[in-house]
Image (cartoon, rainbow, N blue to C red):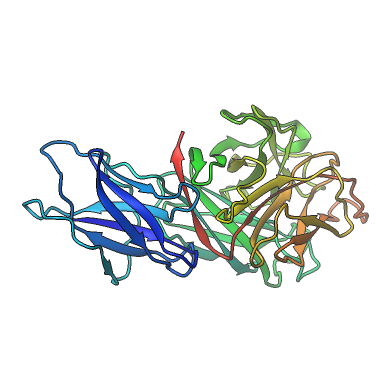
Length: 380
C-alpha cells in the first residue's frame, strides 16, 4: 500500500498521475483539505512492483497546480494487488518524515510558517514536522507597545523553538503583546514547487557592526535575492538584532548589532540563521510566497510596502532591514497588514542619546499566503 500525505488549499481537486517504475497506474484525485497548512492522507494499493528497488513517482497533471506533497509511506501487503480506487483515510495524519530513498515525488516538505502573539515571556512553538537542521526567521514585531523591541530565540530543535520579545537593557523587561510571523526551513539549497529558488543556512559569529561585517557566500541565484537573518541562540542576554548589507547574487554581508550604548563592545558568539529568497513570485494563482527588497526609501516615519500582486487575504509578513546606510542601532516595526500592502517604519532606541531620526534604508520581506502553511521543494 502507498499512503500519500498532502495538502490542497484550493477549492478544486488536484489530479496527479501515479507511475510505478515508469508505468502509469492511473490518475489520483486529491481533494481540497481546506488550507495549505491542513494535511490529509490518501491510501491506495500498488501493482507493478518488482524485487529490489522500485521508483514511485507522483506527477501533477498540471505542473503549475499540483497539491503540496509531504511524504509517501509504504506498507507491505505480501502479494501485489490490483490498483483500487483511492480510499480517503480520515485518521489524523502522522508527524511528517522523509520519503524513502527509493521513492521520488514531485516535491517534499522543506519548511513551514505561522503567526503568533508574543510578549516578554518565552513562548514554545511546536512545529508540524521534524527537521534535521532547522533555520528560524521571525519578523520584526508590530507596534502595539511604544518601547523598542526585537524577537529573540533559544532552544531551536528539530521539533520546537522558543521565542520572546526583548527590550533594550535600559528599558524594563516587560512588553505588551505584539504580532509576529515566523518561517522555519531545513538548511540547504532548494527550489520551491513554483520554481522559486531559496537557500537557508547558519553562521557562528560574535561580530558586531562596529567591528565590521562577515561575508556569506551564495550559490545558484541569477539575480540578487531577498536576504533575511535572525539570531538563533541566547548565549548573551544583551539586546541584539542583525543587520545585512551589500547583497548580490553571490554573497551578502552580515553582522549583529547591540543597543547603541553597547554596540562598540563585544558580544558572545551566537548562531545566526539566514534565508536568501529569489525576488518575485509565481502569479499563476497558486503561489503562496512573494519576496522582495525595496528601494532605499524608508526611514523613521511610517511608509507603505505594496505587494506585486494582492493576496486573497492579509498574508503572513516577515520583514527586516535590508541595508545598513545608517549606523545607529535600528530594527523595524510593522502595522496595517492587508492583502495588498503593509506599513513599516525604522525604529531606533535611546540607550545613547534621545534622537530617533534614521536615514533612509531598504526593506527585505517575505509575504506568505494566509496565517500558516508549508513550503514544498526539491534539493538542488
